[in-house]
Image (cartoon, rainbow, N blue to C red; front, side, top):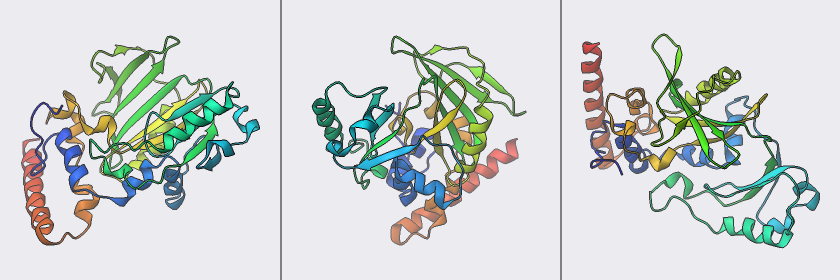
Length: 291
């Protein structure tokens, strides 16, 4: 899927860097922020004021969720992966079937085949949060140590399809809508929603803690909420922009700002850390001299 063999010895593309992150940058914060409930503790610890949907219940048995709660317009989710959401604008018509489906989420283990290790140690939990309704758009903000070169906004359609707008930030801080970053996607050609500046402000604050993190929002026409943080978007693999050394998503990503380089490494990892840092510094110096 990378389009070529990944190069963890000297990562040059975004795909290389995702592969490298999975193998070498074992930052324990990735597990905390990949946990859809635990990420709220990260925000509290760092005094990050971010709007999240109201958390109404957590537990490990769907049978324990109160009936009246399920009738109040909620989303029932598992905290440890993806494709484990049940959207309930009203009470489920078959409570037993709902319980079986929700409980089945807890036995799913995600990300093993792609070594997305940040998910490995998350204790599976069910949680209920206030439903974002009507959901008008989903926004992905790509932030690199606080710098944001790209924003993707997806618009759900009544037929279940999605329209995309791929917003790119220019050197003068203006935004232009470019070609979709997803192959085959149809552009929505919508103006940038008015609350995106609010999203960018919070995403910048969150992003300063990481060399890369994707900040995902949900929005109605009038309000937005943070949905989750994503450490390995698209499992960290994609042909196209992520395999291009000169793409902004790659240029902005400086892995020297990762936890791997902030933490002393021992043995062969220490040798590798010093050699890689020297290589990265040399490449950065060469790039700066050419600007």
